[in-house]
Length: 267
Image (cartoon, rainbow, N blue to C red; front, side, top):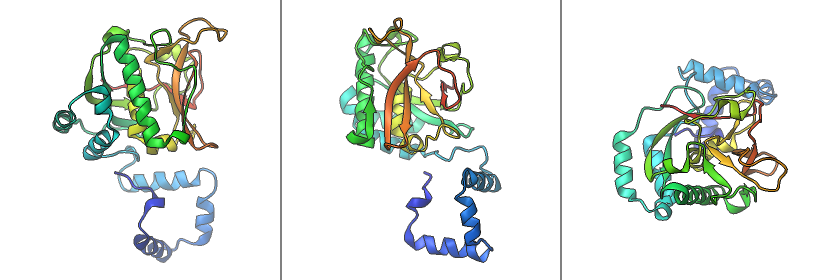
């Protein structure tokens, strides 16, 4: 698991600074690093020097993933056997995928058809609130999980209970003409909700440039009485940098731009 510099032990901090100082790093160098985007240049150089240029800085181990799954208590809500799931996942884990924004995550679903779609959505949102805190979680009031509001792009009949690995590309489809033009059977739905609480470090690092927010284009959202036709919105996850909170909202499916991606599952 990657540890942030802010979390380095104090006993290790002074030796680290001393090594840098002995190597000729000065306070002027640190002033430069604090400049816009310069820290990213330094981080990229360090990863390349260590042979990690194509690796995701938010990567976590299989054990850490399963620990987060266990601590979430989602098994109590969705009704699956946690011990069996953890044992099976430990035996079937794929390698961490290549790519700076590639992740090895989980698909966790409970129930079947529409009832399962709603139950799964609410379970993941509960886990998100548990991870980030009630006051640090925003949920758009019109993003509801009932059958008249939320459905899977692939059809609610495809929803079956499952706990399995899912690999995804969080940098996919930036700079698109529209969400509608790039979404398809591999677009994230509840997998994106699971990702949100499994990888809070990434969510808090969303800066809309290097690390994009993302759409859950495997869902379709209907919001009656809001001036547009039915099923024209797509849920999204983003980070409110000013308020310091994770946000679940939605946008019209015509949205372009590069600050949000439309992630895909890798087959």
